[in-house]
Amino acid sequence: MVLKGVIFDLDGVLTDTAEFHFRAWQDLGEKIDISFDRAFNENLKGISRMDSLDRILEHGGKKDVYSIEEKESLAKEKNDDYVELIKEITPADILPGVKKFLDDCREAGLKLGLASASKNGPAILKNLGLTDYFEVVVDPASLTNGKPDPEIFLKGAELLGLDPSECVGVEDAEAGIASINSAGMFSVGVGSPESMKQADLFVEETIELDLDAIIKAHAARG
Ligand code: BG6
Ligand code: MG
Image (cartoon, rainbow, N blue to C red; front, top):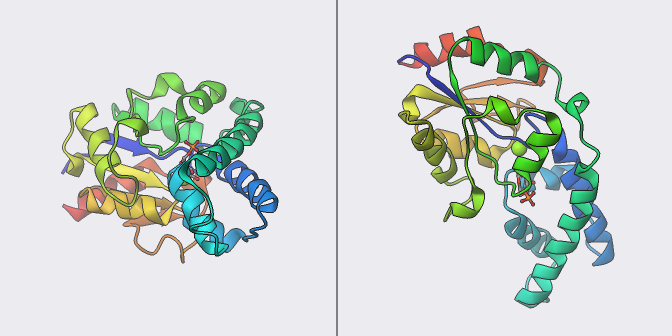
């Protein structure tokens, strides 16, 4: 099988916004008296804004404390905080090796797509100066199911006009790897060996992303 497309997650793969999400949720957590650490935060990676809030409330034993309107207002508060943080993003915030990897993909004639759960994705791509690399950006608002459901990666492949087996997905979240795998795509993880156990291939840092190695591993899977 020849590789024709690469579908990227954004937060934690192209730039370290995963850290900004963590900070914004922690700030909100302080206001509602729920604390959580980085290990818990791993469970929020790749998860939509509202689902993340639900997980945090459950973690803090406050699952049924807030009405839907109150939860919407809490999610908005977090997002307002997050939007302030991402305003400062510039091309200098592209994670190490990512620009070269995108250039290598482009030179190899691969089609590139973005499959981020974030509604702030297009604004972040713009601040990073990476908008033009991506032929398609899946709109998370158009989806029924979030990661780990395969819908977002399947939609990315469909919009690129490719079969999932002709694509690889790149992710830093366990939910994201599960989404790629169940879409029938080859999964490339960025993260610790423990969190990337389900990935077909993984690197610990973005600087290690190597297109040739990925092309070979994807081909070897058949
Ligand atoms: C994902 C992040 O990319 O987007 C999650 O990993 C985040 O942490 C989700 O909750 C939704 O993002 P946003 O910007 O729409 O709140
Ligand atoms: Mg991510």
